[in-house]
Image (cartoon, rainbow, N blue to C red):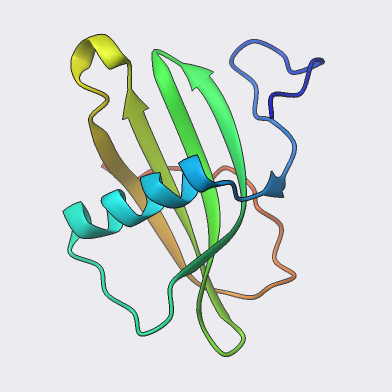
Length: 103
């Protein structure tokens, strides 16, 4: 869902993961070569830019979470996914806040 009051280029509010975001996380994980025994996307935020940024809270174990930032290019560019960054370890109560990406 897109927050009707979302500022252009701003981040949405945190919401439960839907099937589309779950598929994006699965594909991004494959491309990044990331593997956890447990990998359950829980909540996400998004930002519309020249494509879409996703910030997702993912459960990866008992009381273990990570935050992953994923960029999805526009469909005219093949909807390519790029993992921009990961923060780990995190907890269930850690706020899902955009973070600086190290290049």
